[in-house]
Image 1 (cartoon, one colour):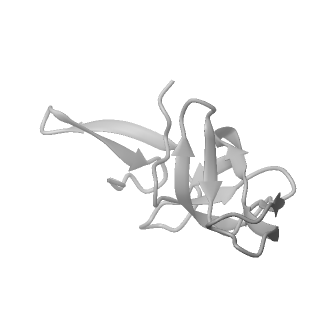
Image 2 (cartoon, one colour; image 1 turned 135 degrees about the horizontal axis):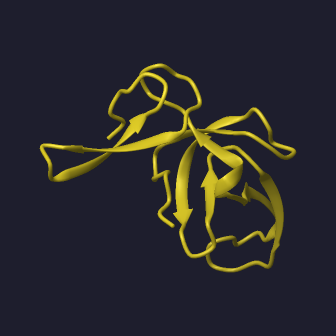
Length: 105
């Protein structure tokens, strides 16, 4: 199963405690079918002091969400939409908005 979202896509969370929040995808983890979204699903992590965190302590960072909990927001009509696939010039496969039929990438 291919993933329908990519890095830097804008998505909206459709279920769970973060429902209704919008954000940009920071990274995609295809093997676990998870995405990390900017300023969504913030978790606290206890860190020992090391080179990167010389102070140590509790840091806040984004946690992963399952791909089924997010829906792509169309850049043109600004609505959450499902993805259609189409072929342009009979060679290049692109993603399309199901609502406004606009090519996404």
